[in-house]
Length: 214
Image (cartoon, rainbow, N blue to C red):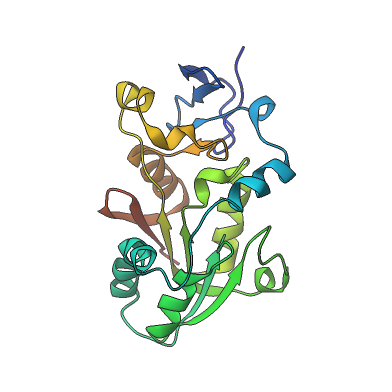
């Protein structure tokens, strides 16, 4: 048995890890590790998991966590007054608030908590995505959507924990969240950057910044 990669569409994935709940497949082309559709949660079950999260805009610890992405992104942007979209903002859009406080003009979108499609009809100087890409069942779809939403020279800032190797993955707590179904390696982002003509940098172990070249 094998599954096509949901990111690069390579037809033959390889079994990477198996635990008591589900198998994990790895794409030999782009290095994405993913959970196949038979083991995805229903939309209602996924939403119920998100409702368990206790991330509030007043939580200083949560603010410090999001600053791992916000600060290098602000530095990369270089100036205020730019248009940004926080994609997958969740129930408490603190990242958008932090970026607004820094003078950026933010819109938000989330399939469960901010589903108004209007922000997806605009174009942006930058897109932020914090702890959401690992939930994507078809990351190729969102990736192409981001490329279309970004203006020339637009910046994409992503926060997600990256796996390192097979041994580490086996003991990795991050994979145990049932809503986490797409796991990225540094090599995965390097592949996407090369394929799509982006620059890429890794300011932290769980942060990646990519920029369009035109």
